Image 1 (cartoon, rainbow, N blue to C red):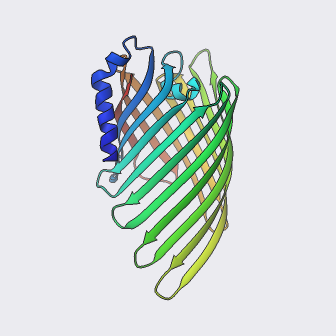
Image 2 (image 1 turned 30 degrees about the horizontal axis):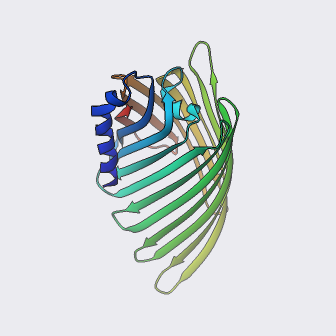
Image 3 (image 1 turned 135 degrees about the vertical axis):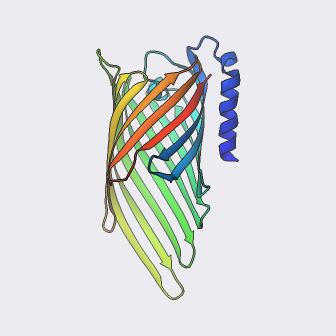
Length: 282
């Protein structure tokens, strides 16, 4: 049902977008429908629906397509629904961002994941405050709470609280459009309770996380980039490195086709992840 809502929003955008954005220069509504999969493993396939509403009109031109929301500094609210193609899991995400002025903003988010193969639910809540110290660069502080429940032959509950600080910026170039950078460092405390018929186990872990991603925009619709992320904990350690490319093909003033490919280098995963879809801005 949640994915269907996003799908309806996209169809509305595609059929009526010209009415709301006749000049094609601004938009307040954005709807997307994408299919994501792995070239070697169709079990990792998802339908992704998104809708976002901006309280004021957002300029389309003279900036990368994927960064118009970030660079507009406009209050907005959005929903995001993901459904595994074989209905293994469902995910629903809602978030909002409110600008107090042209520099300060606050935001909040809620994320829910449910497995359809076994009894598992996960909820994430987050809030952040940010400050644009230039027209195209901001620093932000995040807080996030996580809770998950697994019920099968054993039961497992986890609760986590985390804080992070980050910076994101966009620098324009003369020969190409520009470079987008985002870096963050965070600390998360996780408590886990595992229960079986005769045993109860309680554990805790403090995890430090690092993340850096960069996207070089060759044009406003074509970019190549990479992501490096690492988590260090007492009992949990993970390292991820990926490279990616994204291309947007405008079809009309309001409708575009989206293409994205991602290769995971660490951990080494067979195949290439790809995403294709349509987006409407009106």
